[in-house]
Length: 349
Figure (cartoon, rainbow, N blue to C red):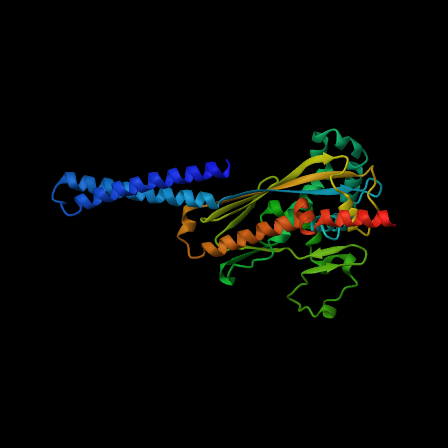
């Protein structure tokens, strides 16, 4: 629906609401001072019901206008020779997903074997989307996207301390704990041989505390799993979606591999901001999506904390866009301008 149609619909709604409110007020005013008959009482009740119905209807329209549906599109590029994901320093999701997959493969030999086996016939993924979606590579990538989304829920700005519920390895839903990155990267580094050379005392950590993040030179990662959501909300997982629900709102974060691209959409950006080898024509770009759906309830209009929830949700969505959205990344870094300048400099060389 275009802006003109939206305006027309809004004007019609205002006219109807004005007429109905006027009618209900007229019914109430004409009967409120003469309640000695059943007829006047009935008229009064009808007026009140109409008035309340109009108010509730109007509030529902306003609440619905606050709802959000956003599609975020990102990509990863697989180096078909070394089986690693290319990293761009300026495209955060590529960097994080690549590092996390590398860390899991280093520490878990079984996962590494399944991952390598799934890429033996990687060329078939270009032409057979069903094989791609059923592959172990797809399983790994979906887990990596989920893990990165969860990691963004660590920041609870806009929420007051007393309104926060923390979720960690002790109280997270089992479906989330089954994420292979949560299982591997969030396991206590003090119980992992790969971090034997790291001493808590060196980092001034008390016996009852832990570091939040630790990376070794070899590529091993420890990332403490702790996320924050509003105190009255619940977090559940269903297939490739996370659901955060309270009596004031419902957030659904859904993700999945969307398409396989060849040739690349704009991979000069990767090459420009990457320290790795240049992308080859044989490498494969995998596109994925994250769908964000936010529905507010009528109760959110009457809560003192609703503004805090709105700001927190807005912050989370902006973080998802900043980390995952490839087109937004190109725009933020003025890529079209940089690309043209780079072309001119190359001509001069």
